Image 1 (cartoon, helix red, strand yellow):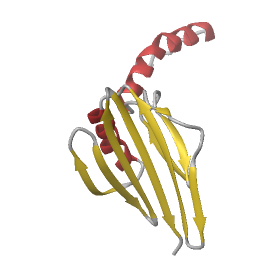
Image 2 (cartoon, rainbow, N blue to C red):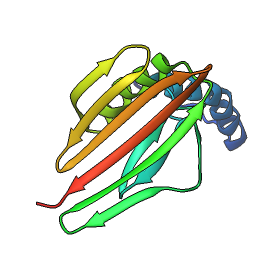
Image 3 (tube, rainbow, N blue to C red):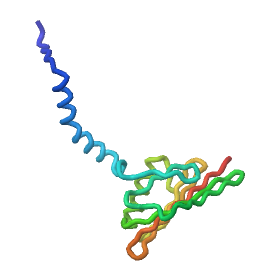
Image 4 (tube, one colour):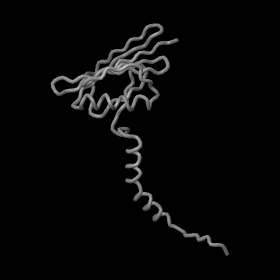
Length: 143
């Protein structure tokens, strides 16, 4: 009859083959989604914002403000990450999360502004004494 051949594979062989492919799959995912495993997200004024690897909260205090029609907040971070890497991180990452670039001033750090629907995010990056400071301010207006 036809030229179709059926080969039976036992379950342990199949599991072993899948485990052999696992490192290659992890590498593929890390190439497709860079920084996804290393970055964290924080919620500021109800909005999820990514934080680049190597940046740590400077204080447990947060600033949040809610008044009729407006909600806002700020969080600050420090780290030994080059300020240009932080800027590049946000320039690549924010559009992936649906944010639209609105304004930027970039010189050895800088200021980035993004908007999405009724939300705005200001990202300020500067370097002082070998330490990079990241301040993120979020504002949401209710239509």
